[in-house]
Image (cartoon, rainbow, N blue to C red; front, side, top):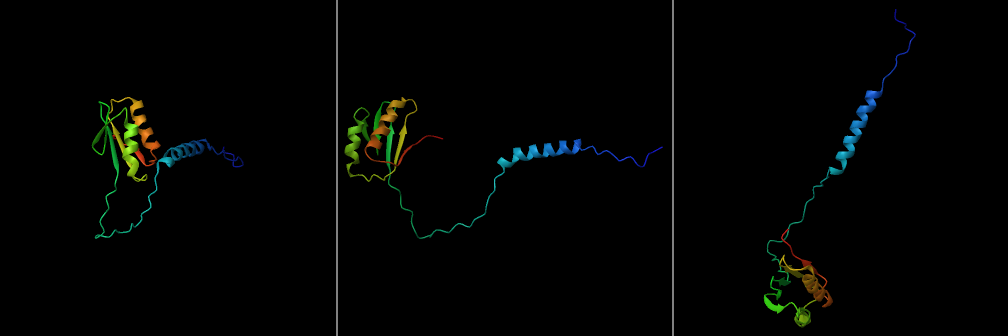
Length: 129
């Protein structure tokens, strides 16, 4: 016969297993979730024209010629040529440097060093991607 005084045993092992699985799923998915807050951006004036930003383009070709705004210079005496070019330029003007992929790293660093030494601090190396 069944004894009514006996207390039942609770098996909580399946509950703990389920909670651990849910905790692991939460830990994996929490960093991936991105929250996005909707905001209303101000409207620009339709009559106001956008001023074109003046910039200096430097292009280094595979035959080691340097073009500053489409004017050719030799890479070997680029530093002196750029100092003369930069005499009347605003130092806050952005400079975009593009270079042929097959050039050695030292050639590009020479151009970058010359630009930095001339006092320009807004310098970007332009790539495809």
